[in-house]
Amino acid sequence: MTYREGLVVRARGGFFDVEADGEVRRCVLRGKYRWRRQEVVPGDRVRFRLLPEHTGAIEEVLPRESCLVRPAVANVRQVVIVMSLAAPPVNRLLLDRLLVMAEAIGLAPVVTFNKVDLAAGEPGPLPALYGRLGYPVLVTSAVTGQGVEGLAARLQDNISVFAGPSGAGKSSLLNAMLPGLRLKTGTVSEKIGRGRHTTRHVELLRLPGGGWVADTPGFSQLQLPPLRREELGFCFPEIAGRAGSCRFSSCLHRQEPGCAVRAAVEAGEIDAERYSHYLELLEEVIRAEKDY
Image (tube, rainbow, N blue to C red; front, side, top):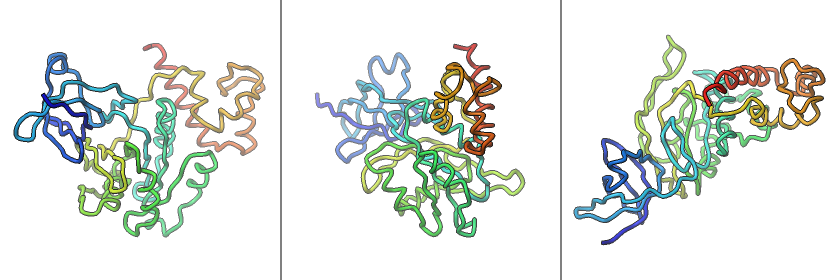
């Protein structure tokens, strides 16, 4: 029998499209993976047996480096967080939540502020703010092409996932980077002020310069991964950098005396809205601790 290793690029209806050596084969599960009903998701590296008519049977799922649950995709290395500078406006709480998620599960974030063309070419203060915190930041427009080449360069040699609210322009950016792709895009509802979902299934797309990117369903809520209350501050670089100066090593930066973080907020050295998001997420983490 002939076996190959490949990458699952699409999973739908019990069938799996697996790319190997530049070819894509429609595969099914065999053996233990079938009767155990183990989920196989895009991004999984698999070992499969060649079958007639350009099909195959997955015999082994290779160990994963990472796996996201929502959306379901494996072996992602970086998260491209797309926020719109206009229509809909930036949801900063969602942005900070996604950045915490990336830090907590070990994924490299790339913050992309899109639709700068609708903001009269003025990105405003947010790109500079997040850039000062050490995050890679891009300002883009799928309409004018601004920043698209730089984003494509960030995606090379990686498996990347796009995240962010519907209407932020994730599919439009992918269309701009991959001419001829023609992913379905949507408009922002004037009534509810957010985009309509346009992407229904996770699919890995091969980039001309190398690497893969997943176009994923848009979402507005994301459950944080399991964290202890003492760990959350280390997911905020501006808090992590000052925590060592707090009077108490167990300081949660809420009401404790001698807190260097709160002093920095009061002095304007830490953005007040970022700090308020930390407190909001901290309450969420504390409530979730009882479940694990």
